[in-house]
Length: 294
Image 1 (tube, rainbow, N blue to C red):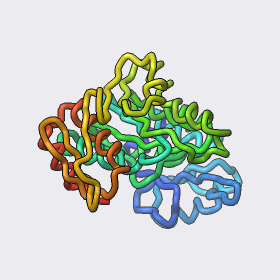
Image 2: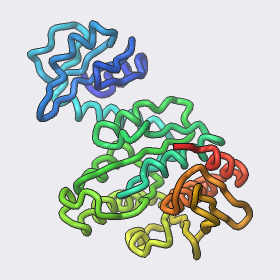
Image 3: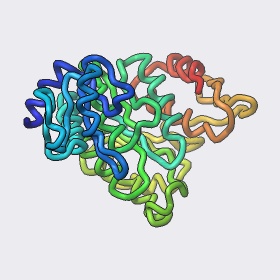
């Protein structure tokens, strides 16, 4: 079965699952493998528990008419996600970085979803499995998509960009997380920078925290840049207070968040910047961020 045929089945049954414990009636089960597990062995159980089809890559388990045998289940899942992504002509915003990805993603989703039907990553499902699953949860009414991308070695972000095809992107920061996998700080910078490399090549738009010189350097050569920070940026804000909760003053309004600590300032600035760029009214941005709780 090729991807076009599989996509026709997916359109009939647009719910994909990789965990038999979370199966719902009508799901398509993808039997993934790992170093210590082989979900092909659970394909029959998945069908018995309500899955309409099970996608497998081990012929030993091809024992039912509703088994779909492919060369590689993970690759097929990612190809299906790409095929689905290609059906949309809407902004896809990718977010990566060493810290603050999930909070920034949730704040941006809260802001955009006030004005646009916005789909986003659930929790921190931001890896080579979570990203395609996120894409496959996007429905036809989508007006925006916000995709979180995590990585612990170089090449990962670039691979996610192949099937997520983001046309907008944001790197929260570059820190010292996963140094071993990246081979040092410079490796982290290059790995996270793969998002900007993709956006540079496709003439996309980047949101840049202008307080961080390294992000300005990493985004050099990208024509479409929208900046945020505490000074000299398209959107600027400063801390009013940070204890017990963070309040941030902007030019025309102040946002009193339910977030603790000054370290959340860049996350709030990012959400205001993205909302502003996509023409969400200032008062709506304020209410969305003030209403957000972790």
